Length: 592
Image (cartoon, rainbow, N blue to C red; front, side):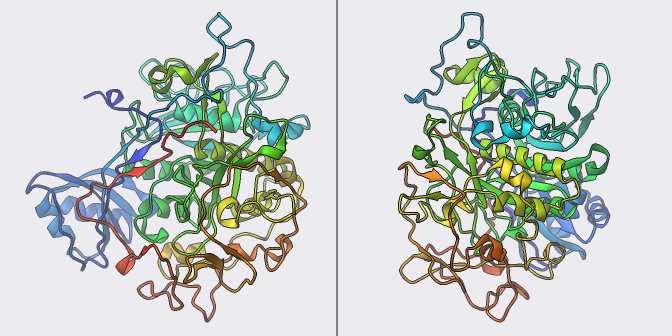
């Protein structure tokens, strides 16, 4: 069956299937596949080569080499699986199932999809996107700070070849490479196949989601209002395609996409990795294979920006890979359709909320994510299926943390252009320390740190502030990846179900959902009692001390988290054997 016949978007559902883990090759796995009927698995070992040799020796078929996490994906029968689960050197076995996109938009009465057509197939003039001005990126564009030379990799459904996307603000070709992780095929520059002028046998984005995300992050199209429609309009782009037209891929494809980004970081100058996807966590952050790949990318020097997810507003709704403590996780706010009036802005009701199950405050920041106008061809599957939201002139309107994530990816590129030598931790610090929390009229916080993190991003302040050393203190990503240390954050829950930060007095939050009242996002808020930004973002730390902010030797948390919703993974994981769980990646939400 043609791969392109299987895609249906708008959210993206990971049949990232459940996975049974093998610890040291001794833990029992009850495979559910029919005898001699191959099923797909991801096998992790001490090295990719060692695992591959074992799979070949057992007669299995290797489909993906996933060097970034020392793993391979393979089709195995039950008997082959039985042999490999007792093979020395096989550390874990994960079930690998399909990644699927689904979700159906409902036309909104607040303006979504109701734009008047100009009569010539497009909206009158060129659509003006408000979000670059909301985060003051337009001020930087006027100063020549536009992402020039900082490549952003978009791991998604691809990127279409059209105005503002394939060309930057200067009219230069900006697509440095396209990699299709579903076929393991790479396309590079020149004429015809392998260039920004792609050949007919390769459709860069048949779905539209990847193009929309890329447009938010980096569109170089100039509107009639004289503003650029993207945050980093000169940033080079790399498209990593992991989803086809109807939303089907696999866990292994996404990991292979991240693997390819890490492998090509140097020659393509990739500095930012955008992951506008989210799936419910089924294990501790360090045991999830996608999270392992994401942490490897961060360690390699790539700034990873991940969506919080569209599963809010309840606490502990942050998804994978947004639950990785190292990366920048992004929630969404909305201007309430009044971009000129900041007093009625609010946290989007769908935006996922922390803390994570390991006690980390997430998201780190929020960004515009409501009714976002960005690039999409009218022939893309989303636009064809849901024409009410297609605005003409290759613009489409969507809401979600996917779009908010793209805003922050663009800001990361701007910060790196200003200071190319920054590490990912330093970029994270600059973006967080420049964020503006939402406050009430009396000056108190309108939303807790578990809902808004440090607040709404501001591109100008992020670029020009020189605060570098305030993020990920106390964490050790090398030890985390090696499996010798894993970390917990300061968040916990008391007997009344209220969330608080251990070791920091004066902070308590009851999970009461998202408040859609209007509030100002201000840089005038004074964080006290341990929340003062100049005091190293104490709530972002993963301290190792006598109280047990460290997971070792069987992942025993010595001080204990009191999660009243009973989230507990025995032996460090909760993966069923049926390989049938679904995980939503950016499910469709109504415009806000």
